[in-house]
Image (cartoon, rainbow, N blue to C red):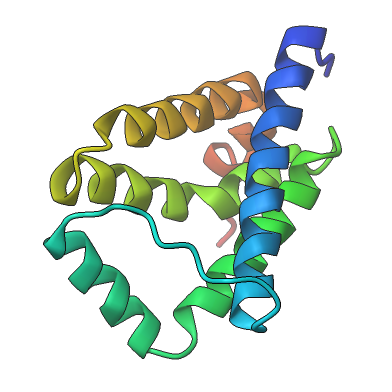
Length: 134
């Protein structure tokens, strides 16, 4: 599979964003940097508070962001990185569109993920063409 320059740049920028967010989240959980305080709605704040109360969700998100960003950095593992980010992107999309007014970012994040997944669609073809054995 070829990876034209425009797709490579988009993939690297998407990976860099999630690598930065994942490392910042991990460092804030470790107490090295202050936790981000974005301006969000009350409903979104309650949702984020509930996620934080689980004790495992934010460390899992930080790990997912970093692991998927690292996978996106390489052509061979980029489809895996997109699969890892897909559930997170869906939650970001619905949180930003339904609970917050950041519909532009939530939509842009989902569109970039969908575009990259479309670009790597041949990597997912074996999932749908797997021969069933009896």
